[in-house]
Image (cartoon, rainbow, N blue to C red; front, side, top):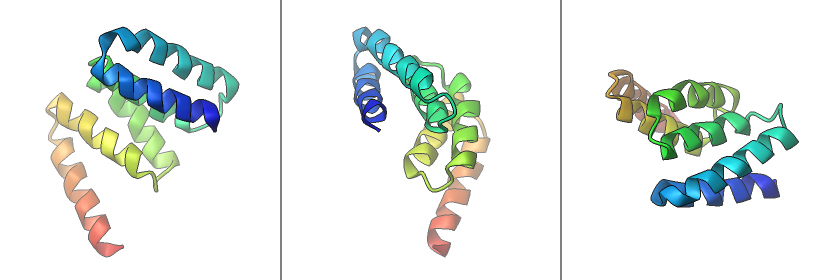
Length: 105
């Protein structure tokens, strides 16, 4: 869990500072090596793709993550962000689905 938290912090910095991207990538790769079967790899890789300006690459990673960890609000948030950044109509449908689920819970 500590490496996951470190990766989250580094990814936050990478989103705001292009120089921090390489460091974030290194930490994400270290997490993947330490826990290759962990579903959070897809989340971290998706956030890394978003930080690198590649939302289309982030979408399938975050879709798989939200399927594997459906209760992750962070995963749903970043998937929605990635879909929106691609200009996909799926972003609107996804957002409406999330709203409907929130009202049912």
